[in-house]
Length: 91
Image 1 (cartoon, rainbow, N blue to C red):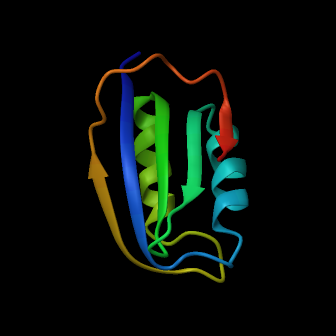
Image 2: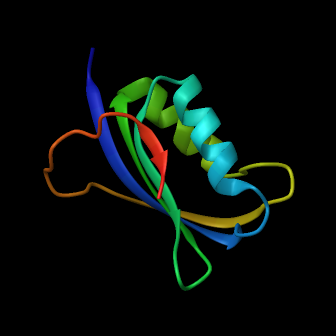
């Protein structure tokens, strides 16, 4: 099974709407590892690792987020190599 690792930055109204907690639940449900955190500029940043199909599904979820979020953009990048994350956590 092909593995994938991506770093994303989600823009819009994504802080104060339960984005990180919802993201963690969604990622764990898909069997992904990584992390999610708020950034100082009002965006949310996340790292997803796992089966390529599950990562792609998580990226699709990020494009709308939880019900109260108003996502205006999702920037996806391939992060530099690093040791794998043991679980998915909120930073």
